[in-house]
Length: 219
Ligand code: AP5
Ligand code: MG
Image: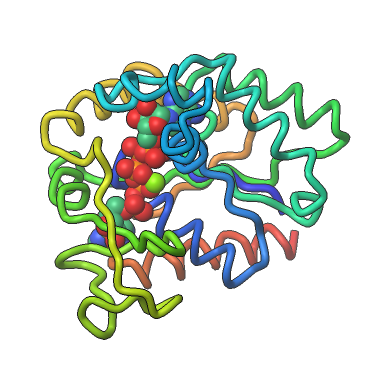
């Protein structure tokens, strides 16, 4: 099954993608994570992306379509993947349609995660993740079971994103409304759109997504 999780910064795309990857064996493809890895490694793409990401803007369509084109060809994607943070513009959506067509596959569903703008800043400013395995946490909403120890890998080193501050979140939100929100109409018109209430607690959102996927699988 191939899915897109669509929603603004802090909607829970990464949180729910990690859960779907664990529960359903789908590969999580987060362009944000891939770009952060490129910045950390100091690659050519990373050098181009760093300042754009820190300002809350969008990295160029060519770069992100290129990254996804290379990644979805890999054998581990054959059994299904979740796109987390891609596509983010109409050009990326059209690019993705072409990639899927060329590889003889298709998108099963686009899950829109609906959240209130007022929740995003709190979610983002309180976010941290495990430096070793990438598991995501929140100061209030998703603390590790044992304080200071990652639930998944047991390590004790955590990190916060350079773009997770109030000012940058507002630019990211603007970019979302300007460039990404039109994709809701694009996928509605293609009959792929399914909405979930992203304001529910994390387990509740997982249950809603699970119900949508079960329904699609039965159809
Ligand atoms: P990216 O990494 O994709 O960031 P984003 O879209 O801003 O989304 P986030 O990762 O901030 O939010 P999320 O929805 O994953 O939320 P999460 O699950 O962590 O992109 C970063 C940058 O890279 C972009 O700004 C851009 O520059 C560039 N980029 C990436 N892709 C690109 C593309 N395709 N084109 C161009 N540029 C691109 O949850 C947030 C927090 O809330 C967590 O702490 C979590 O624990 C908590 N939480 C989650 N769900 C709930 C809930 N239901 N209730 C309470 N708390 C919750
Ligand atoms: Mg994310």
